[in-house]
Length: 158
Length: 158
Image (cartoon, rainbow over all chains, first blue to last red; front, side, top):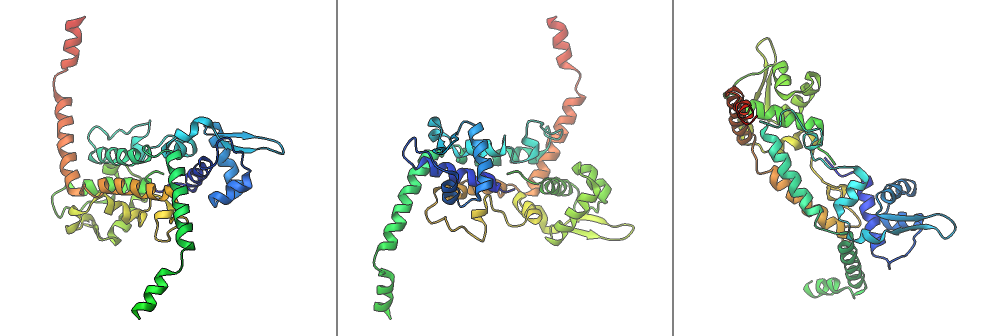
């Protein structure tokens, strides 16, 4: 039970696009670098995201991909479902259902676990995560550019 | 992102074994019927469960499988991990970690979602689920053996 690499890359690329000024058109290569994803694989995922109306693509020399206007409000779960399809933690929770569910005590636990998982993934929007990510990157860059305060303390204590 | 059939069957078979009187030795065929699982596949899973000391197996004409004495207190999560190995909702949460995690805003959400999921799966023991399952089965059997009260109401209303 693990998220597919496809969904992981899709979330990464959506957050990256949401961090850019509205209407920024980005080339596949740039997106692949930002998501640390193989470009060919990402191209397929971007097709799925376009089909799900989370991304807009434009062909031609100035073409590329941009976030669909409404997609900033998309949640992580919407991005995952655009790639993986309808979510079911266990097959018994899928649309098909399960013959055992009337009495199976595990069924209720799977449902409860799925609710707990989804409530987290439905809380966070791509936009919120883009803002938070940019803030963290700035913080990390700031810390890296500070003088080596840890080294100084180590020298003082030695 | 879906639980494997293997882990699903393993949970089913463990709950079934926990519903039997302590020390009951069960044949593979009976367990396969109880778990609605293919016997050959289940045999492999029982090997994993035996290796994880959740099940005890005995060879020979009176052989079979029984729940290991301590396994009643095992949680659903322990059974899943005996089959699927160490759990990581996303690859970035695995032991390998992820280069992006210092600033990646999605990383924290995956971690939060994983905690929510695991806290449910670690709450429920195989023993609790066996007791609950038997109670539900009895309830379903009772309802099925009641006179057709719905039919009677339908006739009265027509």
